[in-house]
Amino acid sequence: MSETLLDERPQANAKPKPQPPIGLLAELTHRCPLRCTYCSNPIELESRSAELDTETWKRVFSQAAELGVIHLHLSGGEPCARKDIVELTRHAAEVGLYTNLITSGVGVKESQLDALLEAGCDHIQLSMQGADEEITVAVAGMKGAFERKQAFAKQVVDRGFPLTLNSVIHRQNIHQVPTMIEKAVEFGAKRIEIAHTQYYGWALKNRAHLMPTKADVDKTIEQVEEARERLKGTLVIDAVFPDYYAKYPKLCNGGWGARTFSVTPSGKVLPCHAAETIEHLEFWSVSDHDLADVWYNGPAFEAYRGTDWMQEPCRSCERKHIDFGGCRCQALALVGDAAATDPACVKSPHHDRIGDLARSESAYVPDPTKVSYRLIGAA
Amino acid sequence: MSDLGDDTVPKLPHGVKFREDKARGGYILVGPERIYNIDGVSVEILKRVDGAASIQRIVADLATVFTAEEAVIRPDVEAFLIDLRDKQMVVL
Image (tube, rainbow over all chains, first blue to last red):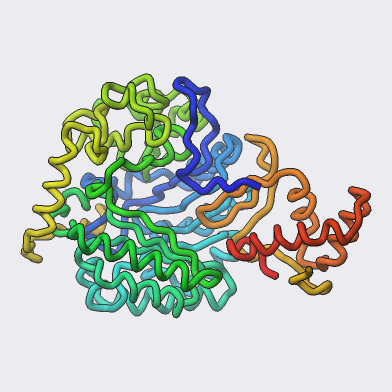
């Protein structure tokens, strides 16, 4: 048996024939009752009227299963804001996809949960913005959200279904990491993701409000390691640490066009959910192309797949098959060139600049009235 | 040395699926954000994890199929299942 944990098995060849994808992030809608400051949705949210209809999503799921997708992540926005969420889940399960519902839990009625589980939903991932009401409201912009989440978690666990909590960490809640882990145990979750904010979309806009200090990040690394050992067999803890303070960049999505991809509410197929920030790329739509055609031939997928596109220092780097030069969207956002080395890398000529930026932003005392809560979503 | 009783019935919990991976070949055990490639004898073990068969029955069956001693097979089967239990992929 060999473990192939997501994001840990890059492909080795410079111009490989792409392997089939293993994961599809289906952003069913951008509508969401929460307004989280760290939201990774684009600033330009897609409207309800632009959303794919039920039959098109079903066709996409059938094509995904045929193509080799294993995990289907039903996400958004809030996926349960779609009236057809149960029907879509049922279809995904029927074509053999492992369905993971990524939800805020706040607007999901108990009867809807029962219907989702009956329809074949395999796993539920519940977002957790804080370990109490005060922080949850400050981050998510919705009163009563914490209590609703707690009730939802109990409903899932009481039905014998596995629950993962997903906590996006930033300076507003970083001091609550140990409490969030304890809450996960208390809620009966099997797994928690302690994921430091990745700075895209709304999170990039709010970066100065979100960036934690290096000292606080180091502390959470210790806290996670301690809890992981202590809770072995009870709770699995997966952690993602912020790359602004890192030495090497992250292996973004397991490599561009290598393992996972996304479909937006309106049907655009993206190599990663932030890829639209790279404006010169041409994104094909599920309305015009079969999913396999997009994966193997779509120009946006071809653009940064493998290593041929690389410049120095990536091109001659011994780590180029390990992290593929990091994140293209981050290279564009911070350096102005999507084909540059991700400045999270120590070999990037801009590396010192992002470390300085993180240090200065984390030292800045933000005015909470200036933070941009994301929009609920256009009608 | 045996850690699990004869009557222990291993099963896959909700949220874990064992299936063939037609696109890439072979078998996989799938859980939340996790995919394990399963090969060789491990495939034969998991094919017998149906929530009804006990460890003893699984081992006896494998011993017949592979014409091997139960006492030789059992520690490997147990170690495999205990490892998966620790990963929350099997309930014992």
